[in-house]
Image 1 (cartoon, rainbow, N blue to C red):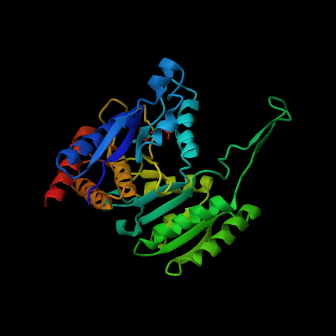
Image 2: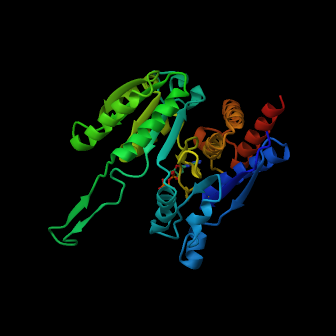
Image 3: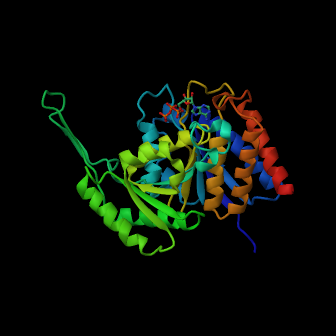
Amino acid sequence: MTARPVRMAVVPGDGIGREVVAEVIRLAEALRSAGSLLASWDELDWGADRFLATGRALPPDGFQRLRAFDAILAGAFGDPRVPDAEYMREILFGMRVELDLYINLRPVRCIDERLNPLKHVRASDIDLVIVRENTEGLYCGAGGLVRPNSVHEMALQEMVVTRRCVERIVRAAFEVASTRPRRKVTLVDKGNALRFAGEVWQNTFRQVAVEFPEVMTEHLYADVAAMEMVRDPARFDVIVTENLLGDLLSDLAAMLGGGLGLAASGNINPGQVSMFEPVHGSAPDIAGRGRACPLAAFGAFALLLRHVHRGDLAGVLEAAIGDVVRAGTVTPDLGGTSTTAEVGTAVRERTLERLAA
Ligand code: ATP
C-alpha cells in the first residue's frame, strides 16, 4: 500500500505550549528520518505574540487554511501580557465551531502506581475515556445581560440541547466503547434537575444503545458520577456527557491519571481535520524554565496518530511514555528532577528503541 504523507498543522501557541510541542516535533522528525512516519507539517504562529504585533491572533483565512490538513497539533494559549483571554477563545472555540469538532475525547490511564492519588485502588483500575459533547449545552453562547450595571442586573445563560448533536456524540461514545475490552458506556447527566435536557439525552442514549447490543450501559447523575470516580474508578469504561459536566468531570479524571502533566485530549470530527492538544494551559509560572512536562503533548500526538490511522505507532509511543515514567525520568510536577528536554529525549529514544526491537 502506498500511503500518502500525513499533513499536520502545528500551532504551539504560548508559554509552555511551545516548549512541549517542540519536543513532539523532535520526535516526529526522528520518526520521519527512521522511515516510521510519512508526514509533513506547517508551523502556524497563532498566539499572543502575533496578537500583540497585529491585533489578531490568527490570519483572517486561518480556519479555512486548516481544512487542508489531516490533523492539528496545538500547544497552549494564554499570556500575562494579554489579560483579556478573548484571543485564546477566538483560536480554540473558533476551531471547535468552524471545524465542527464535536467530540472532546479525554482518555485517562494511570500508568504508574507512584502517580496514583487514590490509596484504596490500584493504578490499573484507572482506565477510562470521557467523551464530552463539545459544541452546545451551556457553552453554546446563547443568552445575554438584562439591565446591566443596575441593581436589577440579570444574566441569562442558556443551555441548548439538540437531538442531532446528542445523537452523534452518543454514537461516538458507543463506537469508542465497542473497540475497548470492557465495552461499557455510562451516560452522565443531571436529568433530575435539568429535566428537559435529561429527557433528550436519556431517550437518545436508549435509542442508540439498541445499535450496539454488545456494549453494556448505565446511567448516573453527575453528582453521583463524581463521587463514584473517586470511590470506585474501576467501574467506568467510557463516559458520555454534555459540555459543562464533561469539562468538570474530565479534570477530575485527569487527576486520577497523574495530573495535568499527562492529560491529553482530542477535539474530533471523525474523518475530518481534527485537533489534538495537552489539557494544560500555557503555565506562565514555569514557562522558559525547562520544567514543563511534555508527556501530555506526547499523549496528544498519540491521539493524533490514531486519528490518521497510525494506531500502531500510537501504541508504541504510549508504551514508550509508560517506560519513561516507570524509569523515573519525569519533571518536578511528577516528583522527578528531569528537564523538559531530558524527558523529551527519553521518550524519543525509547520510541525508536521499541520500533527497532
Ligand atoms: P488555563 O487557564 O488555560 O488552565 P493556566 O496556565 O492558568 O491555564 P495550567 O497551565 O493549565 O493553568 O496549569 C496550572 C498549573 O499547573 C501551572 O501554573 C503549572 O504550575 C502546572 N502545570 C500545568 N501544566 C504543566 C506541565 N505540562 N508541566 C508542569 N507543570 C504544569
